[in-house]
Amino acid sequence: MRSAVEIADARADKPGHQIYAGRARAIIERASIALRSSTWVPIATGFIEPVLYLLAFGYGMGALIGDISTSAGAVDYTVFIAPGLLATSAMNGAIYDSTWNVFFKLNESKLYQGMLATPLGPLDVALGEIIWALFRGLSYSIAFMLITAPLGLVPSWSALLAIPAAVLIAFGFASFGMAITSYFKTYQQMGLINIVLLPMFLFSGSLYPISVYPDWLEFTIKLLPTWHGIELIRDIWFGVIDFSSFSHLSYFLVMIVLGLFFTTRRLRDLFMR
Amino acid sequence: MSESLISARGLTKKFGDFTAVDGIDFDVAKGESFGLLGPNGAGKSTTMRIIAATSRRTSGTISILGRDPEEHGPQVRAHLGVVPQQDNLDTELTVTENLYIYGRYFGLSKKFVNKKVEELLAFAQLEEKKDVKVEALSGGMKRRLTIARALVSEPDILMLDEPTTGLDPQARHILWDRLFRLKEDGVTLIITTHFMDEAEQLCDRLVVMDKGKIMAEGSPAELIKKYATREVLEVRFGSDRNKEVAPILREMCERIEELPDRILLYVEDGELLLEAIAAKKLHPNTSLVRRSSLEDVFLRLTGRSLIE
Image 1 (cartoon, rainbow over the protein chains, first blue to last red):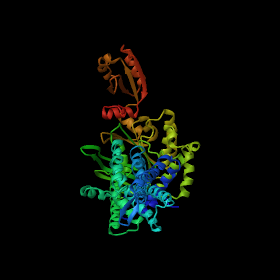
Image 2 (spheres, chains in turn blue, red; image 1 turned 90 degrees about the vertical axis):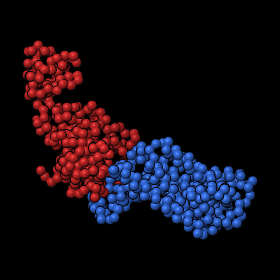
Image 3 (tube, chains in turn purple, green; image 1 turned 135 degrees about the vertical axis):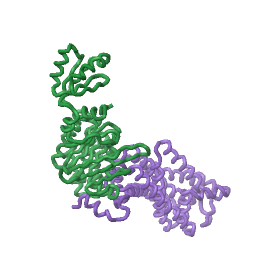
Image 4 (cartoon, helix red, strand yellow; image 1 turned 90 degrees about the horizontal axis):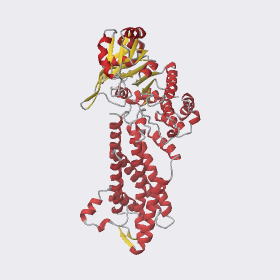
């Protein structure tokens, strides 16, 4: 049986031992225990939203619109929006845990303060919380896939690769979401997140191709993570993997690294001044 | 003195222009119960956070079990159990789950932690509440749980920041009893408090802090002996007459403190002085003879009361 001191001593020579104890899984274990007794209503609503969009826009508006031309040829409108909404599912799931839940733990319950009084480092906390948030993104996107497949909206088996891609997107959003949240102090500031997210979703090509915009707006939208996420899933969905697919992938890798870096630094500044 | 667990020299912490801890020196021996006594804002909590490797000092040196907390933060924290001033229990979890997961943060095995949790539930007298969420606990129970949680890693040093602030007298006594038990088991305790009775009850040795500096150091009895007399006579003549009689009383005792509502007279024998005062036909409205306490020590050292 190893004592707490022996466990910490064994790690003392590793680089970065001050910020990472190699135990992000303890944070994930905590979240899974907390989940058992949490209410399921907010979890369900986060998932239902994209499904409602699919029904209302796909089957309602879609009947008026007909086919949309894409790089994979002309496709039915409902099939066109399905991958965009899958990406949205993943983002919603990731953001749910990494923003409001993190805000509560930082400012109300002082949970991270308690964690960081143990040998855990800020990167353990950041990584554990972010990985937990992406689990939710993963489960939302699997559920979305399970709903769309019987409806004939999934064109091929290779579209299943959209699930790991959705995990990457969720990772990026969770990482960035937690970083931003860690700098926010008030509920008013947190409200900004919702104000920014809805238009980002609506105007990033989830419901129509952004080629309808003037050039300057199209260029601006292409800077946003929602657009990269929607395009990445859409590329996989229709089996058109090219250079731009990899640029979307790299966009999320950068987002993950930046988010982790700033979250870790902020936690250290807040609790280990 | 036996082996020194903690040793600080010229320890200083500044926040911008404000100096929270101003060049303090102290040592804590193994098995000792060491107190930091002082009013709010004296720098006690900041000192605690530096020891706990969750705050970086501005200058000076500190070693905890031979290690610098800035170089070896995780290792130092593995030796410590921390009870913060405000409970930061996991409100989403039950009592048992709180203890369990805290052990897991230290990397301890599930088997070890599960066994330890049973032991700690008994120690904290929370067996009946073990499956209750922490929000449903009383203030005293939460405090006991926070202490039990700090013990899950079997720490060498238990750090208690204002352990009984906000508790009712009964809950305080239960808590003190638990802390006595730990002391008997040889756990080194570091306690901050602004309650003199708590310091007298729990601390073998203490430092009196004010404005980031250490004003005095010693056992409670030594400090009282050095900075106060055996007894204190408290008299009230009413706010108008207090000023009038003070010069007369000054001649009759070793030391006098004039407070807004009463006069404190420091002597070896309070009853004797009270008789002498009555013989001079000065009849106070109320009078009280008591033993000197750390409150009197603090008043002597700083000219102010502990609780303002």
